[in-house]
Amino acid sequence: MISHEGLSLDPVAAFIEPRHREFRERVRAFCREEIGVGRHEGDGEAADGSDSRGRRDPDDDAEARVRARELVRLMGAAGLFAPIAEGDVRGCLVAREVLAWWSPLADAVFALQGLSATPALVVGRDPGGWAARAVAGDAMGAFAMTEREAGSDVASMTTRAVRDGDGYVIDGAKSFISNAGVADFHVVFAATDPEAGTRGISCFVVPADTDGFAFAGAQVMSAPHPLGELRFEGCRVGADAMLGDEGAGFKTGMATLDRLRPTVAAGACG
Image: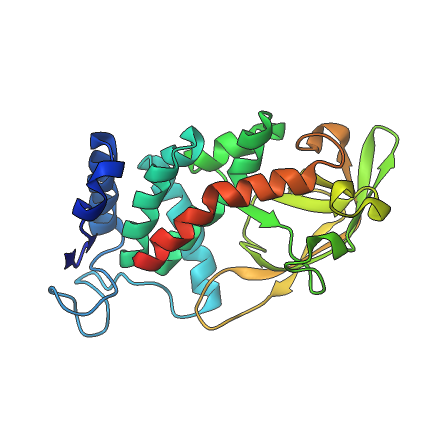
């Protein structure tokens, strides 16, 4: 059964605990208050997709970037990122299905907070406390793995991180990165041993104000969504910025994607 607030949980009742039903009601309440009537026509929605306050997803890239940061703060204050911190995949499924029904941008915000916070949760260490700030809604994150010539073939990435004294110097570029230009911190994947393929990739936390790091420009696609390119030119980070061991970045990245991949289907149902 489908209503204007999403799919019925009845078909999957055996897999959902009472706390997930309670959480779903919290997400619905948030959407009614902060997003307005859902994007689907019918059930009382205005013809232009807005509610009486005119709340709807932005129509252009600049507005989407402002709204995305606002949603991070609002969703964090409402406790909607709690399933990310708890590693509760079912909670994340519930959240994304409801959020996607009401607002694709809100769904994307949730997904990116998960992608940027989960690597620290996977390795059990949170350099700079950025993951904790992300799930609290106090910081927006980005997951920077993709390059123009290295999408699904991660081993072919050309971004390098060279050991230098008590830290690393990162050089290279990333493309099609969600939250590029608006994120407060970035989970960056770079080759520390290019000859070792995926076993030579390491993972770093790079705050947006790090010297040598720059937003290289927006990449505007079909729907308003903060997306863009990042540039690293002599970008120095401390050794303590590394998530996990040197050479274990690919494993960390895949573990993150594996944990969150089922939630993509939930968003599609919304």
